Amino acid sequence: MGNVNIVEQIMSLVGLLVLVFFAYRIYQKLSEKPKLWKVFVIIMVGLFAFTFNISMFGIMVKIPVLPLGVWILYAIFRKKEEQWQVYRRFAWLGFVMNFVFVITTLVAVPINQMMYPENEPASYISTIHDASIVHIHPSAEKSSLNKEILLKEIGRLKEEPVRSHEWYNETDMYDPDKEVIERFPYQLVGFKPKWGSGLNTIVYIEKDGKGLLIQKINFIFGRNTR
Image (cartoon, rainbow, N blue to C red; front, side, top):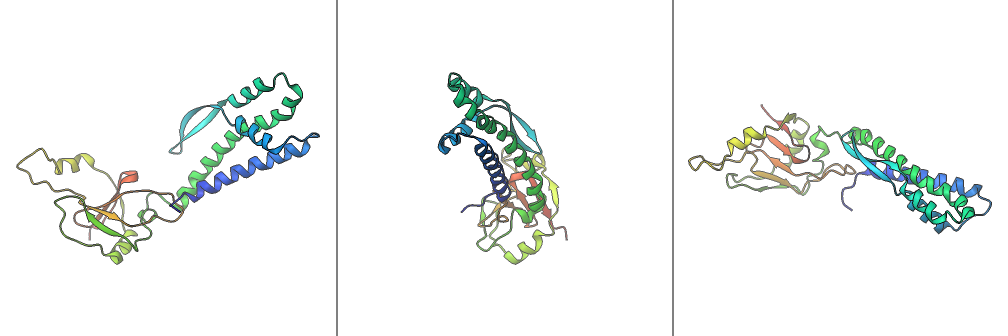
């Protein structure tokens, strides 16, 4: 199984359990109980909603505005009043669950950041048993990965902002008289992030071996200036 975001998975499960709990409560209070598969379909249709996207805590969430699913079901059952009285609670439950899922998504964000800090390279590089480096630029010198030193230095690396314009000028390929030297001519492969983090990143190694460029968040993690 690939690296999944365990926090998001757990919070999604919590949302589903909330849905099952309230659906069960509603179902138990009905004098005439409909078939369960019909209840499932009604809830799923009730989930359909007109939404708008909004950025919160660095992620995009869909805020439900109009209960499209409920309106569709009402149009279907408007001439079947008795059936609509049975199904309408499940339809509205489906719509309300959109808000529950938004809440669980937002709750997952601080928990995930606490368990897998974005400013710590150890979140991105945790297991290196099968790690190695590959040369991705002609200016790269022959070298190999020292796994013991890498593990030791990961905890010492400090976050620095990316100076992309400065680096681009250093590697300007349009000047025929200038030797092209790539700042990050190596790529780290075969490593794994912390289990359950759901992180997928590309890690480049600086030409002097003292810095890492983690592409996901566009920051350099560390220069050993000793």
